[in-house]
Length: 286
Length: 322
Image (tube, rainbow over all chains, first blue to last red; front, side, top):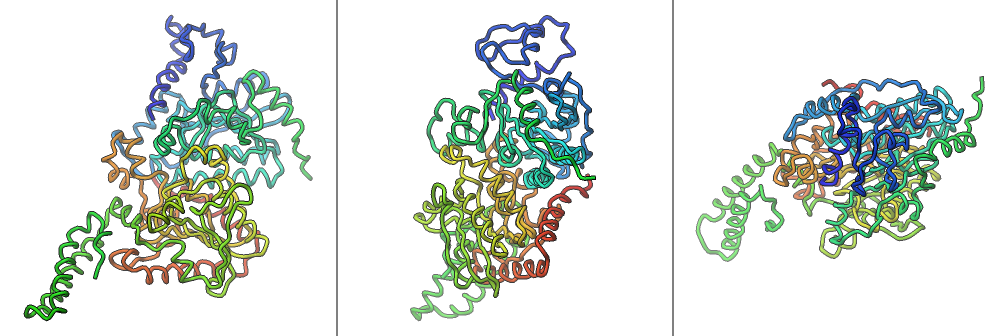
């Protein structure tokens, strides 16, 4: 999990928008070149650095970037039972949740919006890596089901923006059960002949990749995103070899047939607009 | 003679007793020593009592060890005893045959069935051949292929789950491990024929879910089913490999816990001392439990079977109290 620890402080820094007035946050250090980037410029570039790094962004930022005029209806997340296993490692799970909620100003890792992209009605659900590594637990699973139900009710497509280290281990088997549960939600989209498009962002691994991230009609990935089932460290330990450069990155997945297109963040709206326009749901019989 | 080589660490108190019993039995056979017979039966009683005490209250970490015991019955043992006219079927028609997941057609208690499952292997050669029950994408794609066939011919699917997890290797990633698991899970969930899964040993994460998303999910008494291995959880959450026991307890991975959480439907009891000591009895119990589970779907049409499975999974977690 060392890579996770390494990027976490960077994310937390990015999310502290409220403290914009301190000179520290006027500038963001490029994780690749070390260059200091003017924050407003970076925002205008949708958090893509001059060297092309697609930085991790939170749910609200993502939804605003995707919907027409940044306008959408936020869909409430369903309530779920909190900490059903009374789980505790070196910290209590409830305390970890509390801390993540305070840091992210969100109930869990998913945000759902309903609105239009290039005029097409669509439900977008976004997974936020900064909330406990985007981990898939009961809250995220129920949110995914709610998003799919909303899409069916509105007779529109659904886009899922994935980012997660995998399952939320603190919820044990109940997190694992979100794999079949979210799969059932996708099944209901298929039954209704509605498009389900996945946008894979950095990083998407574990049980999330092995369920709803790989079941789209179309798979789009942002450039350079880490996407895989097992994490690179686990694989290196298994095969006792260094992994080749670019392994498990978006471009590698496209080359191996798992991703349809790798799309720059600035071109996502255009791409989604075209796809949603062509995969239009049939008008519902009265 | 009892093979003490495969005794688990917490069973060590039994090893001395068993050795003594063996010595005395040998002495009795040689005609030396008086009252040997009495002594043997005393020691036997003592050993049985010690075994009963050990197994009366197995903690989740000890259960994990029992669940992984190499002498537990595996896919091939169940098939040999329970399935008539078995025809093994191989390959994903795409890349390779992955023997970590086995499959075939056969007659189970009078029904033609598709039987899939993980196989860990017992000898070193077998374990290598079956990759210790850790499947690559080809294994899941073979399972999908066989489930497609089950659907086409209206045959029920029996799935025997016993894996530490899907294989985390470079080649598996290269060929789409995640996609294969996702599609296999999806195939289980869209089947119009009944599917019964039995966790016979280890139900390890996504690699298990991929062939366990069934109408009925049964678990052997000393098996485990978990989102991540206790060792994996210990190294990530507790940052210490010594905390595997704490992780095993905390994550609620035993059959008893999972029944309580509404994740599984039934626990199949194991005789005292575990499935590895009573292979035949356990195989028989599994056969009866699967038969009973399948009977519940007799006469149900495809839509009702699908709806049943959907309801089963969607309700998980919804009625839990904090």
